[in-house]
Image 1: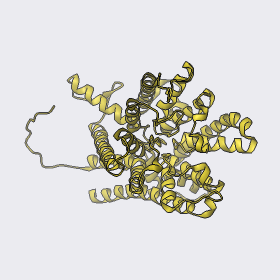
Image 2: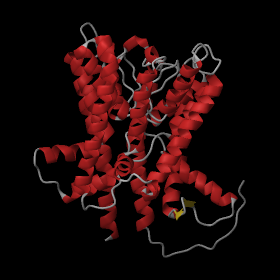
Image 3: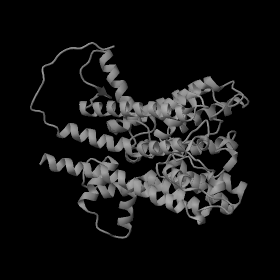
Image 4: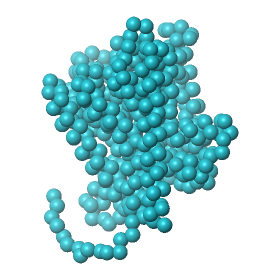
Amino acid sequence: MLTKKRRSSMSIEMLLALGFFLIILLGSLLLSLPVAWEEGKSANYLQALFTATSATCVTGLTVVDTAETYSLFGEIVIIALIQVGGLGFMLFATMTLVFIRKRISLQSRALLRDSMGLPGLSGSVRTSLHFVLIVFGIELLGALLLSIRFVPQMGMGKGLYYGFFHAVSAFCNAGFDLFGSLGSLQIYQQDPYVLLIISSLIVLGGLGFAVLAEVISHHHIKKYSLHTKTVLFTTAALLVFGTLVISALEWNNPRTLGTMPAVHRVTNAWFQSVTTRTAGYFSISQMGMTDASKLVSSILMFIGASPVSTGGGIKTTTLFLLLALVSTVVHGRVDVTAFKRKVPLSVVRTALSIFVIFLILAVTGTALLSVWNAEFQIIDLTMEATSALGTVGLTSVGTANLTALSQVLLICFMYIGRVGPLTLMLVLTRRQENKTTLMHYPEEQMLVG
């Protein structure tokens, strides 16, 4: 019975990883077609593969300019990959099966339950479709609000299209933009309306589908689950922390905030704090930031968004649990607690494992990038590696300026960053739940610290 359970659980993780891989492969083939390119432009397969991976893994790193390289067909392929990648391919597949009135198998329901973090099989399809309606509703509202600004500037057709594209890209924490050589949202760095709408979409997308649904359903914080309370508290704390630190570090920097009026300095510091939560948009020069700000941005990118959301990183709940564990040790307590609730030890161990694995990957990736790109500073390459692993999309060196081997490494990191945390969580949690140890070794103390 135990062997059968293990095989079943492994098949779920493999299906999740394979699903994203096949979507990336299909996207790369479509983006390799001449119809996907602007007239006079072209993209080789590595560039198409990089773009497809970045879009599906909702990252935003690019090796070619999206607006100038890809045609309308190519842009539609990219935004479709972003939407599928943001929702999760299993949720998107379920929505498609329901739409064409096909029966959803028990295995598919189990896969949907695990990929969406649902408590059980009962009502999993209905709950997931509820998530989809919330997502589409938020994206539509964001598109309309952005169009209010874009339509007068670009005309009706282009303004509506830009509003839709950037609303989906922002909510899915993808960071792809159509402003070309203008540099993401730098042209709107003194337009709080656009920055606040985009940042709101990023934050909502990064909270997670279950959190959004719970907040909409329950208006009193006392009724929220431990997960929702943890996500909201940690997200708010990180956003405030990032805004204050980046404001302090960049306030007088003429290459970023130094030349702006005070209100715009705060707005852009807020936006930088938000976008490091795996969004990839930027309103100030990433190259022009101080090394200290790049380090802070790298730390925020490493943490990322929340579980079962459109963002990446080790997740806000992982950080919260690690800090709760430290607090437990400092205060001499036995149980790890949060909001007057005891957290299972298996969950804490999973969080610690994910943190260590991602830290090893980030350090290794930075080391390899520094070997292959010796002309760049280590802080910039740290930011690049963390940006890919956290599926963020921010770069201070320009990803296109890195070697081809470096770009292949970043493709792998983006894939791991999107698929890795979920599959790691499933594998590690199930192994701890299913493992029955009959033999116990004698206990002995050892020194630490």
